[in-house]
Image 1 (tube, rainbow, N blue to C red):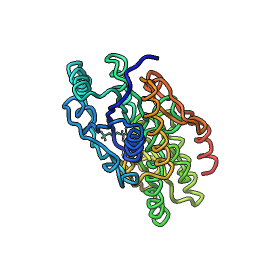
Image 2 (image 1 turned 90 degrees about the horizontal axis):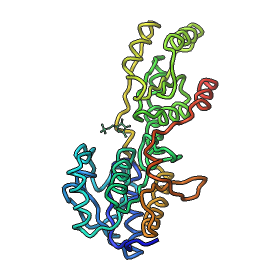
Image 3 (image 1 turned 180 degrees about the horizontal axis):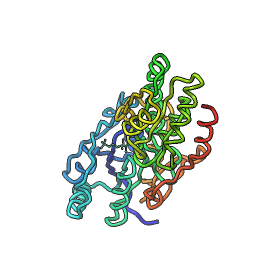
Image 4 (image 1 turned 30 degrees about the horizontal axis):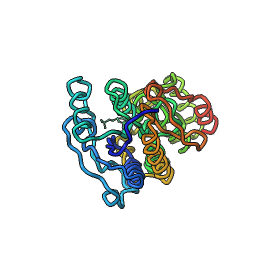
Length: 322
Ligand code: F6P
């Protein structure tokens, strides 16, 4: 294949645990290949506005264990405008950047696919999102940490739920994907989980609670995926129908932060290394990931399609064990 040798790359990120470890791996791999690295500040907004910093081995020291992103980020609405996409491409050209690594979730990958296909920018993406909603990717960086962070919070909620014999409704993030909610419900031994992928029968759920309550069961933890319903609405209905007291916790952004788990750091280190290698080999418009512990790439076109997760087995197990 004929392509311009990659000698200067840029990194653009979203934020979640494990992204700093990914940046570190990309920078140090590139350094060993004599490839210069620039960090784009503030995500796609920084690409439009030409806010770049130079990154070397030293600038990524001591970040492997930190959450967030040292590069800062944005949810750029501006990038959807063609005029701003042209500015983004201009930034890459004027800085002589001939390869881009985009680390993030669905929105970041969509932007990467636009740059690769319409503007012919050599691009590799690395999936990183707590939602774990990248199609064709088993596990995105950050998702494992988010499950563990939520689990830590739930363990604490359980202390009060059992001590005060209350029903707790806990809303978790995940956008339109039930991955996070399902994992957390199974790992914490919750009684119920409401998922975007599954219909629920609130009357049957309340009957089950009333029946359990009459037999002496006093505390419940019910997980609600934000893409399905609002925790407060579910709690209100439960109180109305069962006359039992409920409390609501919305875990929110704590799930996106925190120190990455070992799994996320290891995956970040492997995928960052592989992304640079693939870019150097002329691979573009693809997303790196792990399949059966092998490093592979899939087309970005595939990765940005809606992901369908099979929730049935885990859901049945949650109900079976509750
Ligand atoms: O995509 C990650 C995510 O944390 C979702 O789970 C959540 O719905 C959304 O981002 C929150 O977005 P923001 O941080 O822009 O409020």
